Amino acid sequence: MSERLAVAMRQAEDLILRDYIVSAATQINAGAGSNGFNPTNLGIADFSLVATTLDTNNAYKFMSGIEGMDRFGTGPVRSAYFMLSSTELQSDFDALSSVGSLTFLSQWNYPTNASALPSEYGSVGNIRILTSSEAPVARNAVTNNLGVMNDVYYNTVLGKQAITHINQDGYSMNLIYRDPYYSGMLAQNATLAVKFAQAQAITQDTAIRNLLSTRLSNLGV
Amino acid sequence: MTEYSRMAKGNYVVSGGSIGVSAPNVKVINLPFKPDYVELINYTAASVMTDDAVPFAYWDASVPPLTISSVNYDTVIQRSTGSALVTDMVQVGGGISVFSAGQALQFGPLYKHNSVASADFSIATSGAGGPTTVTTATNHNLSSGDVIVFEGLFQTSTTGMPQLNNIWFTVTVLTATTFTIPWDTSGSNYTAFNTSTSTGNIGSWKKVLYPYLYFPGVATISAITLGNTTTVSTTDAHNYVVGEEVAFRIPSAWGTVELNALPNTLVPGSPVYGYVVSVTNYNTFVVNINSSAFTPFTVNPTVAQVPGLSYPEVVSVGDVNTGGTLITSGSQLYPPPYYSPIGTVRVDTINGPAIRGSFVNNTSQGFVIGNFGARNDSTAFVGGSDGDVMEWRAYFHDLSLP
Figure 1 (cartoon, each protein chain N blue to C red):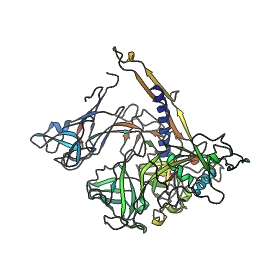
Figure 2: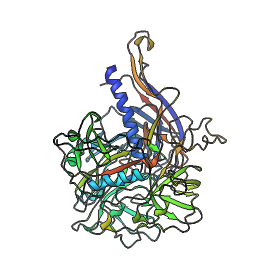
Figure 3: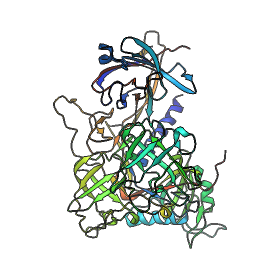
C-alpha cells in the first residue's frame, strides 16, 4: 500500500503541474493539419512554427543534437525542445507527411538511443516528443461543420527555463505514516497519507507554448 | 473512529434571489473534505411562515436518487405553503451537491442543438461592442459568473458563429432562459445561430466546471481600447491585481499585433511586457502601454479562417509581489487569496494568506447549494433569497450503512 501511495504521490505532483500549465500557458491552435477542425490535427508546419517561436524568444533547448552515424535507417537529430503529448496521438505522429527537409523521425531511427528517454516517441525538427497517457485532453471539445466531434489535446512545448517548482516550508512533499496507537485506545486505524507543500510557477512565459490539436486517427479500444 | 469522521458547520447571508420569484446565486462552500451528508437551516425562512420559503433541506450521498418521470431527485426539503410545512424534493445537481475540484478541463452536460428540444438554444448577433445574447429553450440553470464554452455554431456549413468556439465565456444571466456573453458579434462575418433544423445547423454549449483552479490563468481578449494607456477586456475573469506584469499573444487576424511580447529591440533578450495599472472589474483592466499608434483590435475573422485560428490572449508573467491581501474592518485576520468570477464579487479560496498576483492553486472540495426550484413548487428555492441567514452543517461519517 505504501509503495502504491508513493507512486500516486508522484503522479499527483505531475497532474498538478500539468493542469497548472493548461491554465496558465499561452495556447496556439494547430493549423497545418487537414481534418478541418479548429484546432486541426498536427501538421509538420505546426512543429516548425512553435520551434521558431521559442527560438525567437531565446528559449533554451533541453537536448543537444545527435550526430548522424553510419547505420542503416537512421538520421541525425537536431538539438531540441521537449513536447509533452498524449499516447493517443502516436499514430498521428507516425502518419505525419514530410515537408521539405522536415520529417518525423521515430525514436528507433535515432543514430543512438543513448540520450532518448523511455517515454520518447520521436522527433520533428527542433522538437523531441514525449508521450504519456496522462497528457491533458478535453474530450469531445470541438465540433466541425459536419457535426463530427473531436478531442482537443494540449501538447506542451517547453524550453529549459520555462517552468519551476517551489518548495514551501522547507519541504516539497511528505509521505506520512502514523501507526494505529495514535488514533485510539483500541489501535484500530492507522494513517497513511501524502501531504504537499509546493507551488508551480512559469518562470519564463515566452519559453512555453500549449500547441492545441485534434486527432486525425481513430482511437483504438 | 474519530480518525476519519469530519464535521463542519457555518453560516452565511444569502445573496441574490427573491422569495417565490427568482433563484439566489449558487453558493459554494469550500471544505477540507467532501461531505457525505449536508443539512441546511434557513433561519429567516424558519422564523415566519411564508409561501415558497424553504427552512430545512437535507442531502445524503448514500441514498440513491429518487426517479420521478425520468428526472432524478436527491435533496429533500421542507417548504412552506404559507400556512403549513410540506415535504418536497429538488433535482440532482440543483439542490445540495458535492464537488471535488482537482483537475482542469472538467465540463458539465452538453446542451446540443437538434438533440432534444429541451437542449436547444439560439444566439442573436449583437449590437456594436456586444454583448451577445443567448436564448435557451428551457431553464439554463446558470448563474452570473459561471463560465461556458461553445462548440460548432455553424448555421450552415459556411456561416454562423464558429469564431466563438472553444473560448471560455463568463455569462451574465438576464432571465431563466437568456444570458449574455462578453463578445461583439455585430461584425459582417457573424450570422445569427438559430434553432432551425436545416442541414449544417450545428452547435452546442457546456459549462466549465472549475474555470479558476489555477489563477491568474490565460485569458482570451474580447476588446482592446487603444490610447496612452491600453484598456483590455477579457471573455472570462482575468483575476489580475494592480502591479501585475502581463504579456500579450495576438495573432494577426485580431489586429493589434504590436502588443505582442516580442523580444525588445532596445534590450536584447528582454521581452516587451506591460504592467496592470488599474483593474476596472472582473474582465477589464488597464496596462501602462501607450498603444495610440497601434493597429485597432478586431473580432471579425471570417468563418473560412476558423480551422487553425488561434485566439488573442493575455497571460500573467512571473509572480509579481504586490503585497498580501489587505485587511479591512471586519475582514479575516489572515485573508486568503481570492478570485472574482464577475463584477466585484470576491470568492475566497481555502488557502492560507498568500501574495496577491502570484499564481494561486485553487484545487478544492466541499459542497454546493444550487439554485433550482422544488419538484412541486418551482419557485421554492433551496438556497433561500437575498438577505436570508443560512446555517449549514456538513459531515463525513465513519460508518454509513449499508
